[in-house]
View 1 (tube, helix red, strand yellow):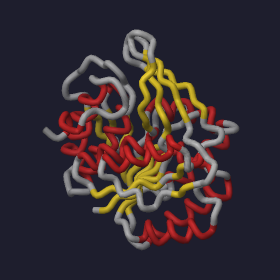
View 2 (cartoon, rainbow, N blue to C red):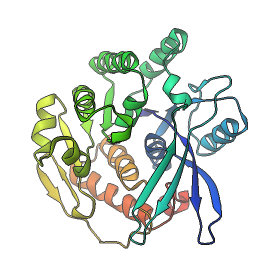
View 3 (cartoon, rainbow, N blue to C red):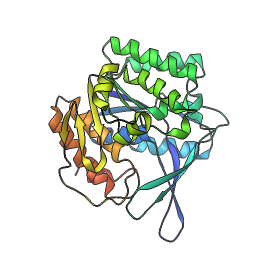
View 4 (tube, rainbow, N blue to C red):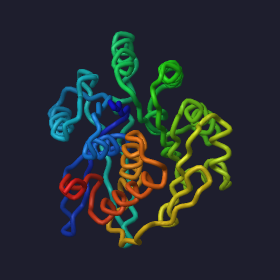
Amino acid sequence: MRLAAIGECMLEMRADASGSFRLSYGGDVFNTAVYARYLGMDVSFVSALGDDYYSDWLRERWQSHDLDCSCLRVLPGAAPALYIIRNDAAGERTFHYWRDASPFRRLLDDSGYCATLEAFLADHEAVYWSGITLALLPEDRRRWLLDLLAALRARGLRVAFDSNYRPRLWQSVDEARRWLEAAWAVADIALPSGDDERLLHGDDDVTSRLQALGAPEVVLKLGSAGCVVDHVSYALQTPVKVVDATAAGDSFNAAYLAARWRGSAQPEAVAAAQRLSAIVVQHPGALVDRALVVP
């Protein structure tokens, strides 16, 4: 199955014990794309970059993960967005972003590229994207992408969506709710987190709400409490000491989708997702070495 992942990837800065910063890269959809590729899926990464040194640096690293980057949009004069991660003693992280001028915000502002992207996605069997993807786009481009995914889904495309709610990217909670509900309505597999849904709606009846919106399969991630898939609860298989929670949900999504789209039943997909997420949170950074995932 060919999977297209649509999202932003940024430069990452992380301080080590000495206070020196290490340069890396990451982004919610990108992280899932990489782990899905590690697990054997044929993955295309759809994003936008500038034409500076660090844009070239990022593209080289994306391709080093064996991602198909043939549908990247390159914007002259643009430069990548940046974030800095700070971790506390429990491994929880705080992000500080510089993304107002992110080239991804302009991904769909060219009709020629939009036509290219439509044909490109039509040549795939599945698409994965997130609420961050949605929030970064202007309103008219959000609607265009939602309409495109709905049309392709009607022709057999499978769509997976994670809300990844980031309040700072939205003008209001009401705006976020409205657009995220539109995205759930075109999703075959919904991958929300309990924390996000409580911030957005203040309730825990997530599965029924998202299924009523049109998402037939709902995978509610609950952190250390495990997950709930279509009203069935799954505890964590083995508790782990969290070193860095970055990409815990992204890696979970990748393993769950890879398993489900290969025909595994939900319990087997959950087990695979929890195994991978447990590996990832025991190491610093969003991306762990491939050998840890596929020995």
